[in-house]
Length: 485
Image (cartoon, rainbow, N blue to C red; front, side, top):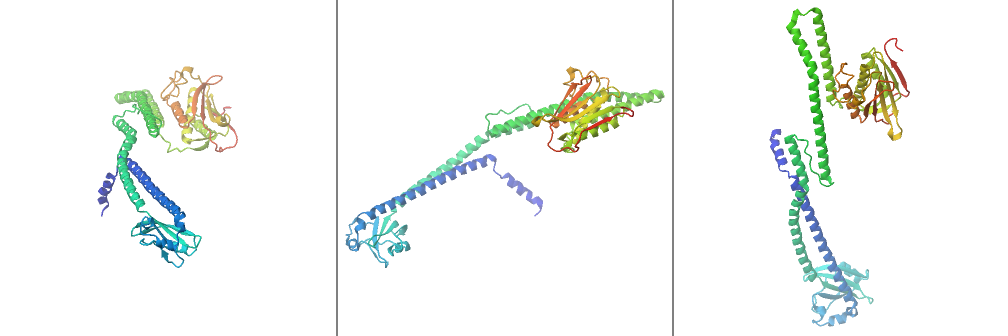
């Protein structure tokens, strides 16, 4: 049979699976039914044991009474009207040779191996239950002091009748409880699944309306309430992410409009003017186009960096922030050979994504070079601060530029924000936003301060790791243009 022919069968089996409500109802009903059956069976067994115990007590009292004085002659002389001649209580004497004597007209009692062992003197007594044509009997076989063995049998017919009636009553009760359990199971399943049904309805509504601002009402602190709270938290996180995405798209559209307009204008001018442009004007126009294309390329790269989730491509690992800062300083030195970088670092182990942290440090260095005086130093310090549980890895980047207005320090990490001192400098306004995002992803923090003596100071702190850093000593690097001190 081909594989395709099995598809409907498997689908049909999946389609025939019981719903969660039905399964809960069946489980709850079976639990109650089994419990009821167990209790009824236990009650029946307890009653049977109680009746056997009562029969044993009757036999013990009988054997200690006048029957203790009976001998073979007296037993045979008992008249048929004697109480011992009825079938409720039987008596007979056993002898070591296996012979038995009983009252006239009374049926004999079965003699088992245990009874013969008592008659032979190997054991003192025996108790057991036997079946006869007249019903079951409880037997007590006792060897008396004179060597004679007396065997008493008490009829269990009345006890068996009581057990039958009680068993029927228990069976009826178990059946009634099983029927009630089926109904109770449906009610329990419906009540238990009602909060889940509300959660399902809310999830379906959110999927249909895309409205993430309608939380589910939660009552209590049970598992379902915690599930609803987790669902509300997820909705809030999704709503925040969607709003952030929408703001990013809107801001990107706004920021892209200026370079795109400039490119469009210059291209239109170049196409319309054609050969009528003077060589110098044509060269200037081409330089403007190249600068605008570079600005657009830089902006797009920053947007991609800010928007993408590249954790899978850049897995977290234990690293030394000092070594990473030193490598980043060399990279910044190659990009801006006229800048001067002064790095002071001690081994600082952290756990993070190397590429993301390098981008964060590089953006801080680019920002310091951009706003510092030409050839002015950029100070970088990497160290571990704090004591015991309050320890943290710290990175400081400071410049000698105009600094940041106190009113704007809280906004410099916003996307596309350009302060009053940045309007004359090229840039996308995304560099520090990327810094803030990387630091946030690493469960750290960043702030902007005023450098003592003037300039801006950015302080980044990250949670340290217990891993031993790669280098074992502090380092100081001063990198600058040739001939700089």
